[in-house]
Amino acid sequence: GREGRVHDLSLETLPWLREFASEVDAAMGQSFESEVFTTSINFLTTASEHLLVRMLYADGADEARRATAALLSVRTAWPLHALEYLADVFVNASYYDRVREYLTRECERVVAARPRLVGAVTHITSLGFAAFLLREIKRLDPSIRTVLSGYQATVSGEAALERLPWVDFVVAGEHEIAYRDLLAGNLAPRQVVRVTERLPLDSLPPADYANLDMTRYQWMSVRA
Image 1: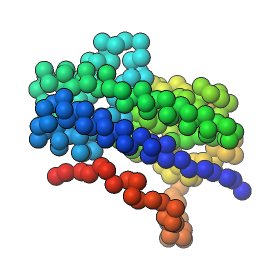
Image 2: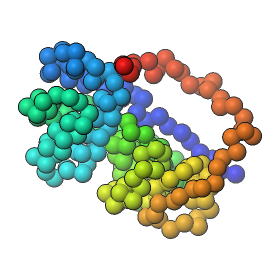
Image 3: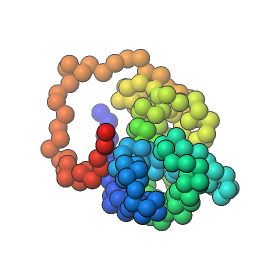
């Protein structure tokens, strides 16, 4: 009895991410190390987490730069002087301005549909984007309940609520089940919803990928 809509709001930004990767390669001298970094999941994760850094340190450029260098230190093997140089590349990248403008417009489109709940499913590569989207949704319409779920939310639910005050619920466990309970209106906001019930996977029909155009997802590779 409920209607839901799913949006891949990061898909249109992939060409910009590819351009950003080329900028990083060029800045680091087109080295083997930079090529491995920019074609790996570490680059996707760093790009997303740097967006989160920008949000959390919006009022402090120096703090944001230091936080970015610290973030890069756990994602790459470059020495300190290279990390500081690379942090400047991230801080000054036009990629983030383009992403912010695009995602804000997409959030306006989502809000225009007048949803009761808007949620974002996170992995390590998408936490920053999810946090940004939910912040914009809440800014555009404070009455909408915002939900953060998925792997990243599961491992740090309380910390996410503490650092992201625009998130109403963090779901640990099967978020499809959590949405059923959230839509019933029985849960107060600002809490971690822990779901122990499991989806009946054996009784569910196979997923229908008829409308999924896989050719739009071919850029990123992971190297061993």
